[in-house]
Image (cartoon, rainbow, N blue to C red; front, top):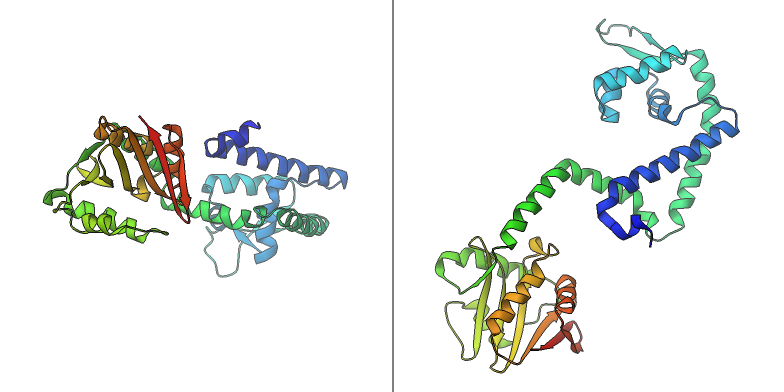
Length: 308
């Protein structure tokens, strides 16, 4: 299997860099074939000046999201090649540097315009060839916005801090001191799709302070914060009719730990049955890894069983 695809999100940066390098290499080959002396890295400057007529170094730095010194270096390089020139805009601050095309720069612009048009058509065609490719650019824009909202490094550090909490998970009984935390997770369950609760499960979830014969509500806690719960019933055959983890905690390895804690709670009971919703993909995967097998499947409800 291709390493880049097998590693998934872990090699996203390397994969994007590799794709970018292939993209730029192909465009450079087109310019060489047409005998046009144009470096793809110049495109943002040429695009902005063609669009606006002139550009300030500060504007270039802002639009490209690079440093002022980086923008200055880029402009100076094109000035040395005789493609751009600085000028003083009438009525503007003398310290403000404006840049425009020279006659040589305009000639090069005319040469590269057909390449840009052909490139745009080719990329549109490429992005239409696959069903997922069609959403590549919108998805990339969303990813960039999400990176800006919460930097990836902060997200990684947050997940590592939660990993320490996962190692201290516990199953506890309901108490008034954690009721507020419990109610938040309960609301998340009720907001999930395909929710179906039998009357007994619904009662014990609504009234955690009360009890029903043969039933038990156990809360999954991390550092005294409720992040999930399970409704258990039965004697020798132990059924977990509700098994839920807050979506914010899904997919970080917590599901197998949750199932293991429930098995410990079950003690000597001979069989365990988990009732799961079809959309609980992480929990279903964890149950499979823990040795559970499909018992039944009715609509959106899936039951898996493990003999002890």
